[in-house]
Length: 295
Image 1 (cartoon, helix red, strand yellow):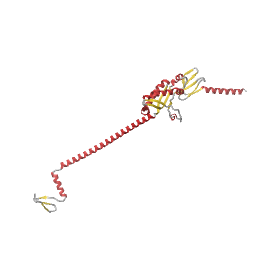
Image 2 (cartoon, one colour):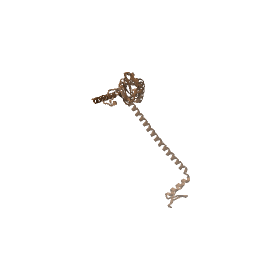
Image 3 (tube, helix red, strand yellow):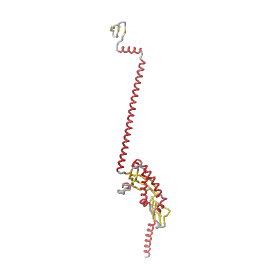
Image 4 (cartoon, one colour):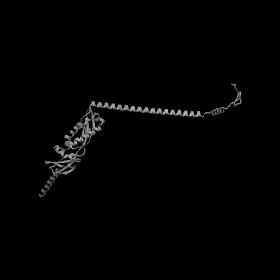
């Protein structure tokens, strides 16, 4: 009987120990820090990621200190889901309203999470984002966009818009929530029908102007080629004319009376006759005489 009691007691003790271990072990997720609190208040030191032994009278709230992302979009694909609520931002711009789909990459600063927990009545990082931070982001974005035109946000200066929003959110959220904003990126910008038509007309005009300028440059280049070609042909003709003139000059300078007589003599010999002039006759090479009248 005593053995049975001992076994039962051991089993009960084991169960109690197991439950004690279950309630005393606390896991802080990777990329997070844990804020420890009790009924008496909050501890000043946070817990790093991993398993920790804690008194069953202590609890932990977690804050992400690794990079997190908030998405504001009306496209479910941006959330990797088939359906999602429309969280896009309707923001004012110079020239009209724009609907912005935006991602914000952020992380809580580990040194500030204890103060955050105290200030916001025991909320953890997830609760803070859902109840305060995402609404603050929307408000701050609307403070940045009016400094840009609709066209700037839609296409021309989107990188400048991203930089301006990132810097402003980093400043404001850093002061208010102890958050480090790594980047804010505009995914997509949507316009109402009227603005869309204006933008398309402006884009078309820009394309037409670029095409006209290209055609103008092409025509100018072709004209320059033709001009160069014509100049080259003219230069060749001048060179040929100069060469011919020089040749004629050299030939003219080389012709003398003696050369003329020699050339005539060679021609007569080539045709098989010579002339000998006498007082009243000409004797040719075949022996016949031809009478000439004296002048």
